[in-house]
Image (cartoon, rainbow, N blue to C red; front, side, top):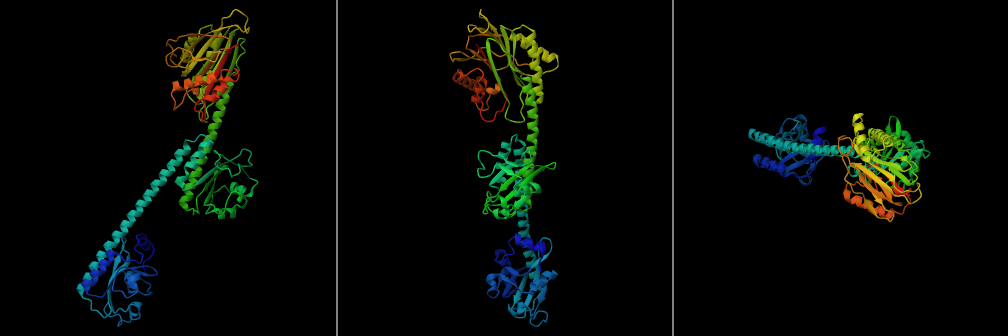
Length: 581
């Protein structure tokens, strides 16, 4: 009988079904016509049956059903031996007289030749049968041998076609899976916040065939898992999955993936999850993320209906959990770095001095992304009771090195402002020379503004005007909010940024501030946008300041940031305000 891979190949090619096949019926007609016999068959021998894709002259009902279940079929011997079987008189031969071919099918003679698959294994026969004894001539047998060879060629062609189709399917599937895994890697590699990880997890669902995904992370005090909420996606789930719950504890303690075909099977292992898992739920997977023997959290996946988790499905789910775990580790490293850098940066942004004739206020907001640390800074120095210098700048870069360079550059400018009674343009020129000469070689932008009280009275008497001198090294121009609410961006073209050419000429620009007027210095993070032009954003800032001009100085910088910056903050922002008393 035909066994193993040969049977699998016949089944895959659709040849094991008991149905008529036009090509094999043609071979049966040729046998019948050439040999002059009433019955001609193309038989495929299966372990428990014989099917006849080509058949003529079989008695009812076998001609219609195309299938028999003979226990000792003659074709079986032909397949077993891989050799032709020729019998002129079956009834007279004691080996075959009691066979079902004689007793049930009523045949009296048989001539059958094997047909072979692509590996050379006999899988069936081409045979001629007669109800009476039949003397098979050499010509008959030669014809039958030729037709068997042609039938073998047809069978092999069918099997090769199916094999090629199967290989193509495997290749397409492998390509899709590779693309899906690459997409997974790309999505999670770019995630820098927990919300972005949840978004990537949700976006991965269609590729995995899931309809729902959730992320829980282990809390810091080892009491449970915290569900990462994202825009109310999981309103029916508890925020904290406590380890005191036996079901949660079992998942956390096992630290290995758990796969369930449906909600009912999940509840058998996790009965305490009954408030949140319905028995009619589809397939479910709980994927613990363990790094260095430490549980980071659990990824939860759900399928729409019952889902049988095969090896590939489990491997893909494990890959997803690995991608999430790596993203979590990376985010924690970035958060630590960001925390150190922002702490350093905040430490260098000292308290503003008390200037009798000015109200000073400032704010600093770091970027939302944990892998971004800015070099924004501000400072103010009181030179004497009648003069003060305000400074703001932005060092190129978004990392710890940028924060360190910012500290050095700010310190040098602060020292220059204190030691030299010089106009802003000269201070910037000296700073640029020191930046190059001392080997700091930082690049960035800055604005220096000097306010000199011009009124005759004592500081703070309320009738003092201020003369403003300012110079910009590639930095946004200052904005003045007049006491009556009118807002203007000061005229004057910014000069070359710092760190490019220390010999570049720099210019001072002048303006006057009356009591109640407010000078606003800011970094470009306040107005830059990827979707709106710089000029439009500056006009937006002017409009915001017109609306906020009545706010106290202490509230103004933060109020401006709140109105101008929405959603994900891509850059650091520093704002410094000075209002003439």
